[in-house]
Amino acid sequence: MTDWKALRDRHDGGGMYARVAGMAAQMRDAWSIGAAFAERLEPAPCRQVVVCGMGGSAIGGDLARAFLGDRLRAPLFVCRDYRAPAWARDGSLVIVSSYSGNTGETLSACASLSGGDGRFVAVSSGGKLEELCRDGDVPLCRIPGGMPPRAAIGYSLFATLHILRAAGAASFGDEEYEEALRAVEARCQECAIDTPGNVAMEIAQAVHGRFPLVYAGPGLLEAVARRWAGQLNENAKSLAHFAIYPELNHNEIVGWQTPEALVRGAVVLSLEDDDDHEMTRRQTEVGLGIVTQTAHSVIRLQAGTGGRLSRMLSLLVLGDFVSVYLAYLNGVDPTPVEKIDYLKRQLGR
Image 1 (cartoon, rainbow, N blue to C red):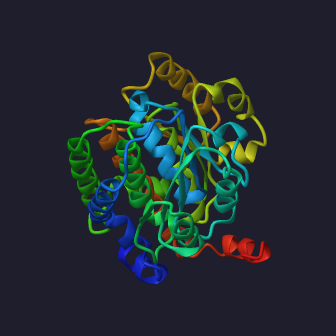
Image 2: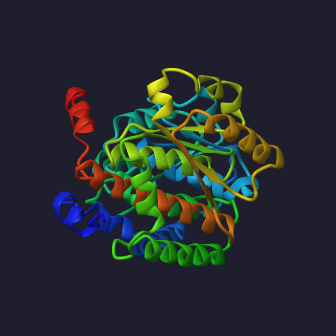
Image 3: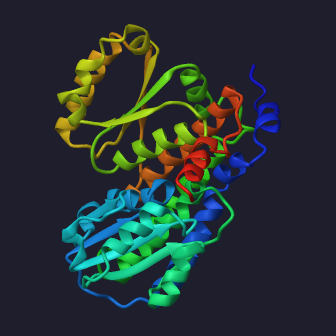
C-alpha cells in the first residue's frame, strides 16, 4: 500500500498539496477581493472582451468563458501571444492578467492594444504591470503574491468574473459561487491525503508511467481539460496532452495506431458532462470505442450534478489533486518548474 503521507514529506518541499487542498479558502478570499474591486468599476458597453495572459493567469479567462457560456453579452477571446489581434484595439474590454506582473507576452500584447479605444483593467500581484497601471490610471485588482501562478487559479478566475459582471459583459448569481464553494469543499475532503484509496490517488496510480491524454467536449469542460493537462505537465513533470470532441474525431483519432509502444502506453482521461451536446456524447461513445482497442486504458469521469460553476470547479480540483499525487509517484516536488525558469533566464526575464 502506498504511504502517501511519507511521499508528501519526502517530495513536497514547496507545499503544493497544501495549496490544492486549500482551494476553498482561496475561493473565499478571491471572491471577496473581486467583489470589493468590482465596486470601483462602472458599466461600459464593449464589442468584445480580450483577456491577455499566459499559463495559470490566462486560464482564468478560459474558465470564465466556459462557465458563463450564453450569458456572456460579448465574445470573450483569450490572447496567448506577444500581439493581440488588430480587431481587438477598438471596442474591447481588455483584462490584462499576469500573476507576477512581469509576463513578457502579456505586457507586449497589452502594449499592442494601446492607441485604440479599448477599456483596460488589470489583475496582478504587482510587478511591472502594477507600475504601468499606476502610470496609466488603469484599475488594478491586486491579488496576493508569493505562490506559483497555476496555484492562484481562484484569484484569476473570480477577479475576471467580477470584472465581467461589473462591466455589464456577463451575468451570474452569488448563489452559484456558494454552491461551487460547497462542491469544492466536498471534493477537497474526498481527495484529502488522509482519505485512503480516494479517486485522485487511484487515477494517479493508473496514469503513473503512462502517457495521459485528456479528452472533453467543447463548452463547459474544454478549459478543465486544458487545466488537467497543464497541471500534469507542471506539477507531475509528466508529458500530457488534451484534445476536444468532436474535432479530435476528425484527425487525432486516426493517430491511435502508431507508434505502437506509445499508443499502448496511453491512458485516456475522458471528462464528461450531462450538458454536452447529444451528438458530442455520441461522438465520445464512438471515439472511446475506437481508442479502447489500442490504448492501455480509458478512465471516464463525470462532472457530477449542480450548476455549471459547481460542476466545472469540482472536476478541476480533482485534476489538481491527481497531478500532485502523480508528482509524488514520479518522485518529484510539484512546485519547482526548472525548465520554465531556465527558459525565462534565456529570454532575459
